[in-house]
Image (cartoon, rainbow, N blue to C red; front, side):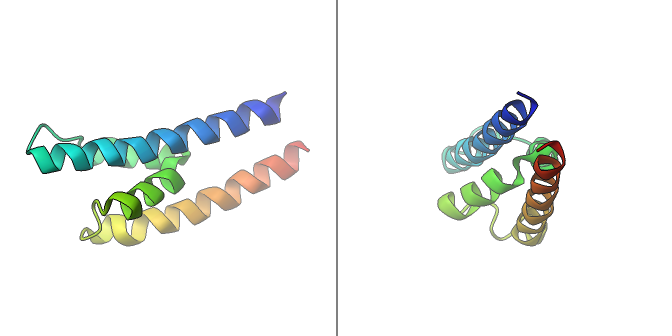
Length: 91
């Protein structure tokens, strides 16, 4: 049961990260109120970096910002390693 909950959380936070990048890109195009970088990084640090990286590439959003361009993929790799380690420990 615990493994299912962890996997569901990981799936939902990455979906959230992906959608947040889409929403922020759409707002940028419309010159509307944007999602702060602090909030973007918060989602990434809460294990949403993989979804955000996919969203960044899919929507070509934040790709000129070095912190996002290199930081998000690196964080995604670290989070994926930690996620796999946690799953192995619980199995």
